[in-house]
Length: 132
Image (cartoon, rainbow, N blue to C red):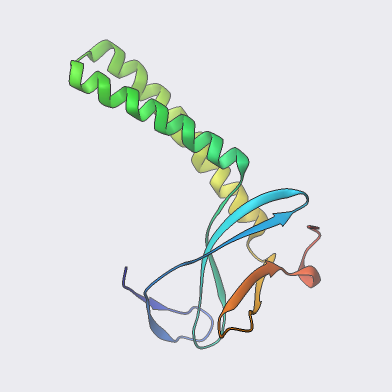
């Protein structure tokens, strides 16, 4: 992966070659966060947040998608229409949950030096009411 990026905070142009991934426990719940950091100013960009419910909804969507693919092979138009409706509902539920997770955790996460020249993702205790 190689993406040209520009930091909103400092205007630095950089090539994004990889994303960071961290697993955190927040309020006794595990979350997986995908992110990147501006190499110039250190601004954190949260790309996605996933929790148990996200994985459950994602699994349901994948299962329906497999059924859609089988119905396409069988050329079953009636079943296909029904499954497309179910698939749309599952996709909307997943997107809504993703959006709520991003709203919940953006601004509540920060990075700290990890002692190996990189960064570690953590909860910003000064800027949140979320507890570990």
